[in-house]
Length: 116
Length: 118
Image (cartoon, rainbow over all chains, first blue to last red):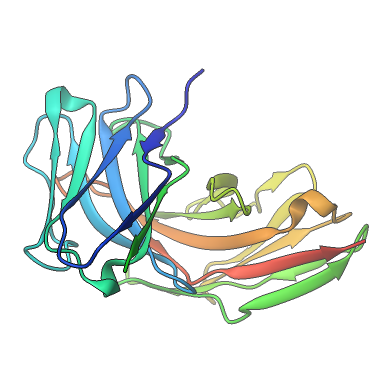
């Protein structure tokens, strides 16, 4: 079956521009996570969505970052006024509801963002 | 707060040999899960193996096995009969169960880059 997909695969943008990153989770997965992976670092949690509940935004690094999830499915991560330190791979993961016996997160291939 | 430490940034192993990747974590939780994920150059994170903290038996998946020492908060990954396709970044992850709107919280280590040498 189809896995988690993300677009674009790579994005190069100029400092100060806004970017939108998209994530399509696996059908039926109500939980969706965004992570940031900087060079040589582990995964940094950004934001979590569970169904139609209000998202947990505790990991967003600044108010330039925002995310939404329409209809409980597709999610977009928006970075406004990009800075060079925003350059990283942005990974999306989805999983079954948190009360499911399966806790595995399924990851997308990521979007590599480069801010010049 | 939970922390996950992988103290080996890079490792290499000869093809067909065995290698062990280390991972330690710090938590005050009693009920949690531990994972090893593999990230090849394609960037696709793939689950390698999962361990429930309440289970004493070490998880095994084909050539992959773990040594879970709960008291020592250690969770190492052993890869037997290493293959060229095992070359990847390996991440250890800790998951804290939560039934609130914060969801199950995952904490990742900084990764170990494994190279399998032909």
